[in-house]
Length: 425
Ligand code: GDP
Ligand code: IMO
Ligand code: MG
Image 1 (tube, rainbow, N blue to C red):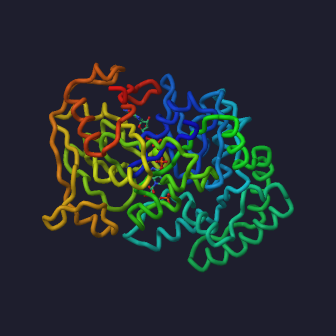
Image 2 (tube, rainbow, N blue to C red; image 1 turned 180 degrees about the horizontal axis):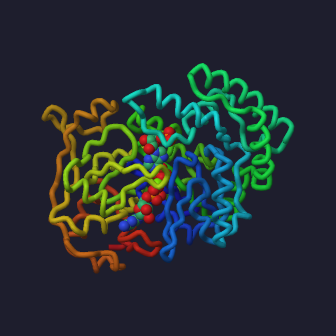
Image 3 (cartoon, helix red, strand yellow; image 1 turned 90 degrees about the horizontal axis):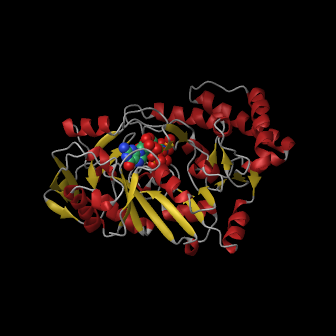
């Protein structure tokens, strides 16, 4: 299994980092392929929390070479803060590779993100305001500045000055605060110089590693239903977290991807605006939020909570060719008398089979639930499938039946070792 991809199967924060941490043991490279510092990936090791935004989660293992692929948008201040944080905690980032083709985020991207959210008035997307959308828009418009440009400091400074000058006009026309161009040129030139030693032709690096039989893990950020093409547009992010994006954003060919793991919580959460069929506004929703500590890693915003939606997961299997599913945070359901799983959708009383292609249709969908008895037992200490209460096993069996693929691991707590291997049962 040389190349494994880990992809969020819902709206993000599924616990991808914890599964990546677990899979990192058997992989030599861990590669981010899209997104930027809108991601918040948490790994808890012996009570110590690592919340990573840009550096691949595999960094916590010495044998892993962490790679930021061509599909990522890189905010240099965040990257270096993270490198400093990791190194101060004893995790060397000396092997970190950043693709020369990755695009850079600049302060004007953040200004545009804020302006465009403000202009939407009450209809905000609820972005992370990190400048992600505007940075990808510049990439598409072919005016972006790439990490590799930092190798030529004079040209790099010129590019920053040119772009900053143009962007300043747009920002001031939109009523925003102009940026100090020369200050930005100076600061970002310093960052650029610091970036150079990390730069790499990551595509050749990864293909050469494959030729040497190295195992590579591709770390998705965001998730299937935040995908620019396949998510609930316009309430999406500006990249492609789905499996096709893993290929484009790493430079590995589609046939190189051998194992594609979808990550889902045992329930559903979403941060920011957009349709959410199984969203709960009652005490059950409150209990999921409280017990699950559902507050965003990046922005601290409360995550919206609801029951597990297998219609979404079936669509995620199609879009990503998922080979297996990791079911995280099953322990959060420990206290419920009964738990629900959405197995189908209806619209105006008629069943809906395919995942709706318009967000306004999704807003009118009614979920069809299967209600199961809860287990009312803490499962946090359980490490063998056989230890789980019968009701928890039944829950997993319904997920497998409804989604049509096997569950490989089940998360029973936030700590690195809080999981059990399910797939052999
Ligand atoms: P990611 O963005 O998909 O990597 O997920 P986040 O790190 O943003 O959010 C997942 C949260 O759930 C983090 O705080 C994790 O520490 C935590 N977590 C992951 N798996 C489990 C689990 O099985 N049980 C519990 N209780 N917490 C988990
Ligand atoms: P991880 O990798 C959850 C959401 C934002 C907003 C929308 C667009 O930790 O799962 P953006 O700033 O990307 O333009 O915002 O996407 N969003 C996430 N939600 N987890 C994430 O990342 C997210 N990254 C972006 O809340 O609704
Ligand atoms: Mg997250």
